[in-house]
Length: 114
Length: 111
Image (tube, rainbow over all chains, first blue to last red; front, top):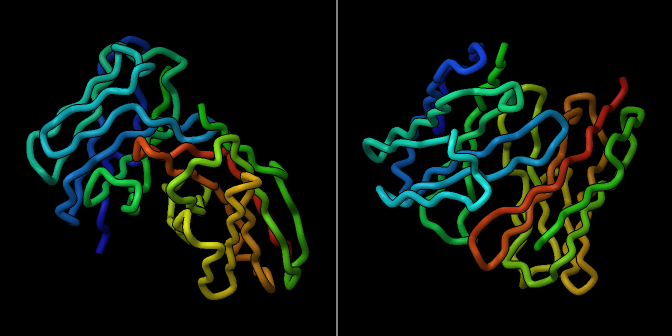
């Protein structure tokens, strides 16, 4: 009965080799978020989609892109991963873009860059 | 810019002890505050959500309090168990709908 699913759970890529992380949800929520969490650090919001509207955080590097082909799926593309991009990537969903709404998190994908 | 601090960074207690985790935030104009649990290598699980108009929320052995004016929240865990071992993160919700997280407190409950 998983509600927010992330694949793969672990991803190893090479320096500069494009990589895509996947998130899917069974909650039919309008909003999907991507966070980056480095070791022992707070999760940092990269961007979010409200339906098909993409909202980028001002300090998210251009190296990070996202796609949301439908309500259920959202992808995080890292065009040219650097060593500093090694982190846990967390996907979350909420019903609406409202601070009253709880965000539901997936299990995360741990990215290792060699 | 909102900043969230959690103290201590790590805490180790014997099983059965009651404990308190602390969270402080710099901007008191918040909409709500959430406490999350994160197991090693896993995602976040929401434990308690306190709206800005509320003073506390309880769920089982967990009780979270909120004092907006002083910019503080505490998470009280009663009769701790080894299964409570995890990182506990505090996140503050502001008017821009975004969550600002603290770095978390790593809790270890020893049998």
